[in-house]
Image 1: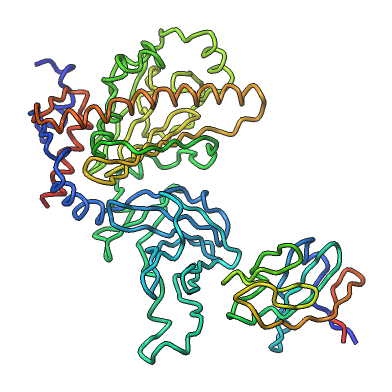
Image 2 (image 1 turned 45 degrees about the vertical axis):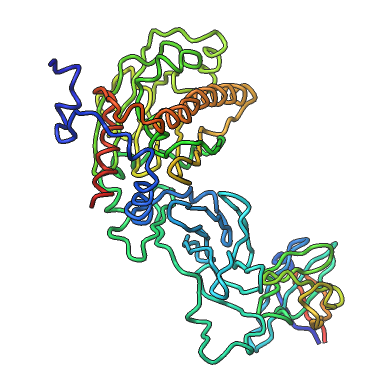
Length: 101
Length: 398
């Protein structure tokens, strides 16, 4: 089963885009080297939106305290963040980015 | 007394004609009064809105004469707001300042205090406090946002007023001055340079050095030889603000290189062009020798506009005998290499003139501090200086 997240064009290379599914789930969708990824949008440290952060070397930098997470694995890679964020399997087909599962 | 040689005294007899005391230029006590009665009370120009074009862009401006620094930030709603750069936790600066002006950008439109990570948004609200549960019940996030500073925009210029409750709004404060300059294409002419330095002089010494054209024939003989000689025209005093036209002699011969540069750029103060971009209030008589409008937006901003070029000088008091000078020069962005060269030529000419201007200021201050002379004598074309002294006196003694 797949669920549409956004249009492919919403997520430029090296950028992150917030998708609010309207049911409490808010995801951050990324494009790295042409491939798309998704994580929870909420930082596990503060209550920041990671989609408001900047991407550096495959990591999302939280805008509040500059903690970082690996976009591909969700692992917390920089203090003050220490708790991993959830990642989601996504795919891209027919000009849309889809959530798988 | 002829009408032509004392025309400004005749137009503005209330300013008087006597000598002006040097005491306000050298007295630390007077400076303390200026801080309280002027710089903490009136609207101060702190930048251009296009310096912080995107949501989350911010600038921190130190305002020593008002004993604070202002965070000026554009929110996600596009609105520019100002706050004191002071954290509600233990008073640290929220944005770490790297100098008189510190620029930054946050995609999230927030600023984070680097001491303990308190996060504030562009509306000043305290968004997040790490380990918030350890604070006591009497602590409420909603009561501990950034302290706002009154902020407003005129013609793309950002103003702040440090007073908790400003006595007037910006529009009322600017009054007729705003109408005088409205419509000039400040935003279209946005290519240029900024110079700044600290000068060991009172801010009014710096103001005075730029607020007359009497000095041009002598001190600018190198950079602008024999160009200004018809003096001031259209002096207009508008509340605490003042303006006038500075005129030039058309028959002055530019050097061959300057002539080429003028033709290409049209960005020097002494070049001539046909079509006017000036508001109808500027040079209303269409004088052919009009060079530029010289104005003082009280207290410390000098704004000059001309065809194809505008520039400002700002004199920020640091102490009674120390001033931060910021000179900014703007023209239209060049489109060709030859225009680029001509613009650089004009900018360098201007730089040289400013270096000549600033060269006198520290000497003036030292000489005034000797108290060998306790008064200064002003001629009729130094009317803007006289008006400045009278206005400062009125504010300080209000």
